[in-house]
Every structure is written in structure tokens, then in C-alpha cells.
Image 1: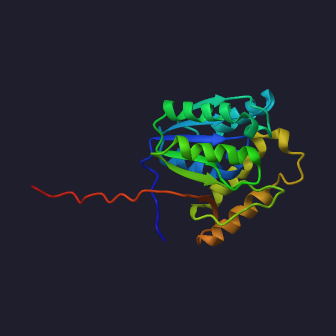
Image 2: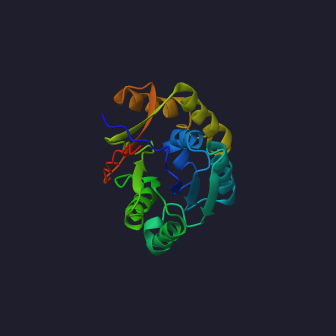
Length: 220
């Protein structure tokens, strides 16, 4: 099983169609990245959301990414209608690609059942051709969880911290019948089992480049 080390990543673009998408799917990665690579630049792009929900997302970004160089671009495209606003969504993604020389991009999966998620996922791979694009999974009513091929093991404190922050940062969602620790930690436990860890988050990578670094020569 191949291990990828992201500690050298210097610039990340995180794309989210809706407030809380990114944190539900990749909150553990955000916490891990902030701890492992302090000072990394993270540009968070949010496509939809009411003013209340966008404030929640902004608070969550700072909570999940302490110590990073964080910037946010928030937009108010209509929720559930991104395919009909494809041109505007494309310009948002391309603007992020122009602004940030990203080495890592986080986006939804291309086969996600939600049309907004699929739109963002498809645009990510066309705009960021020189970055590693990791597609995250979002549990939902549609039951569209697939077969990921890349895992981030999470220790128990990180997994529980993720769940804790989801509750504290997104109070508007607490009334939803699926918003609870059993969903958040249950999926993390299942993905952990798949990679021999207690907990994990899972991603799909459709294309990556293998680089073999030359061995330094001792000329002393």
C-alpha cells in the first residue's frame, strides 16, 4: 500500500458547493494539514449559501485550519442550480486557479448524486491540470458512497475533534435527522477499517504523477 506525504504541500485550493460540504467530507484532512504543515496557504472557495450559512462556513474554516494562511472566496450562486449557472461556476474555479498555484485541490466526486457537487468536481479537473486533485465523499440520503482509492488515517482525537467542530460551527444544521456523531464517526470507522486504521477519511484520485527523486550524491 503506497503512502503519500503531503507535509511538503505549500498551496491548497478547497472547493465546496455548499457550506459544510468540505468539513463533513474532509474535516480530518484539514485538521491534519494544519498540524503537519503550519503556514501552508489554503484558499477556500464556496459557491452557494445564505449569509447565515456563509458566516458558519467562515467560522468553520478558521476552526478547522488554525495557523494556516487562509483566504476565502464566497459566492451566492443559487443552491441546487449550479448546472444552470455553469459559466459563472467555471469562472469562479478558473479565478481560483489563476490566483493560487495549487499543489493540492479538494473537490467533490464526479459521480456524486447531487448536481451541484458534480458540477464543481468536473470543473476542478479542467482548471487544475498541474495539481493533485482529491475528490472527497459526502454522505447523504441518496446513498451514493462509492469505492474510494485513497485514504487518510485519522487518530481518535482528530476524528472526534472533527465531529465536535461540525456541531459547534454549523448550528443551523443540528435539526437535520442525519446530523449526528453516528453518521460522522460511523463513516470514518468504516473507512478506517478499509485502510487498517481506527478512523479515516477517503478520497478518489483519478490521475496522479509519480515522481522519483534522485538520490543525493555525497561529494565530500
